[in-house]
Image (cartoon, rainbow, N blue to C red; front, side):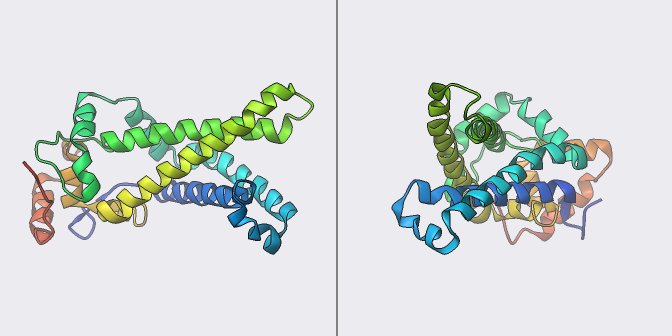
Length: 239
């Protein structure tokens, strides 16, 4: 059943909490490390002290590491769906990636194949973020605890690896924020309220909507009615 006759249930609350906690901890890790890389941010040392920022960096590192691990227990449905989706990248996802560029300027291309719970672009982003998480965690733990336990050569490699992973992760996060907040603001509701507009869901996650209908969780009639209610916000198309 749709919520308020127009929203499709999407994310459980525990999954949403894990998402924002992970995002916040990554941001704080990035900020507390900035003075190490740019003199422009040395003022943070003057305000908080280098030792305090180092402690905060480690505190948020623990949160960053623990969040997805705990999430697998308290938000099993959400993380299970995430893993299943990433491992099911198919030809429709490949077509999505080819047709995706116009989405960057808010234009929904014509001929886009129906997508599942996560579309091809989201699957790519999730895969990248998972790799970044692993690289940051492994390299960070080695830097934190490896002194005296591993060779200096290995430790020396971990520092640039950690920095590069953080930089790529930050760039990916900026792109993710831009798409969610500017290009597809309807998707942001999913990570705020746990549900998304039926019109948006049908346009961007058609296979998922078909699955929900097949399971009897929603009906085609109520989806069509919800789309009709929201015709004042039609999806742009090209082609």
